[in-house]
Length: 148
Length: 168
Image (cartoon, one colour):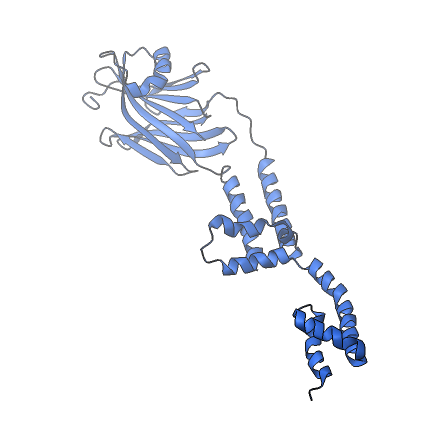
C-alpha cells in the first residue's frame, strides 16, 4: 500500500519539477552604472558590456555603482534603491513565454515616477535605461539582463 | 519384543524424504521386502507426493519469490538503507506490472500527459529575438528608444536636465 501511494507521489513530484520551468522565476541582473566624461576609466566588472556602451554612448568613464542579481517571480515587484534611497528602480515580471520575459520597469525618484516602461527581453539581450543626469555632466545607466 | 513395523514406520517418513542416515536407510530397506503394510505406507506417501508435486510447482511459478526474498532481505538487513536503495523496489519491473500498481501509475501518467500537453500546446505568441519595448512613458521628460541587433541592446534614454546638487 505504501508503495502504491508512493509511486504516484513520485510522479507528481517529477511533474511539478518539470512544469516549474513554465511558471518559474527569471534570474535578473541589474547593474547601476555612472557614466561621465571625467577620466577614462572603465570598471573592470563592466568589461562584458564595455563594447556596447562604447558603441552607443560617448562617455569616457563608466563606473559600476551597484551590481545586483535577483530572481523575479510573476507579479512580485523587486525594488532596488540607490543614492541613499532617493532613486529606486522597480522591476516586475508580468509575463513569461518561451524565450521571452515581459518586464515592467518603473524608475521612481522621491516617490514620483520619472519613467514607466514595459519590455520583452530575451536571454542574452541587455536593456539599458539611461537615467537622471548628474551635476558633473555624467548620467546614470541601468543595465538590465535576464536569464531563464 | 519390539515390533519392527512400529520402528520402521517411524523411520519411513525420513526414508521417503531422503533424510534417513545410512544405518536407518539399510534398516528400512531390509524390512520393506517382507512387510506389505510398510510397503503400502511408502506407496501412499509416494502417491501423496505426486499429488502435491504439480500444484506446488505451479504455486512456485506463480509466486514472486524474488520479491518475497527482497522483502525478507530488507527486514533482516542490519544497516539502514540509503534513499536510493529504498527507491529501487518501486522500479522493480514485476512489481510495477502488478495491477494494483500499474493501474494507478497509468492513471497518473495519463493525467500528467493531459496537463503537460495542454501546457505545451498552449499557443504562445511569437516574439522576435529583439527585445521589444511595449510602451514607455514619462510625464516630465522626453524619452528615446533605440534598438540594436549587434550588439543585442535596447536603449531607453530619458532626457533629463541636471538637478543642482541632487545626485552629485
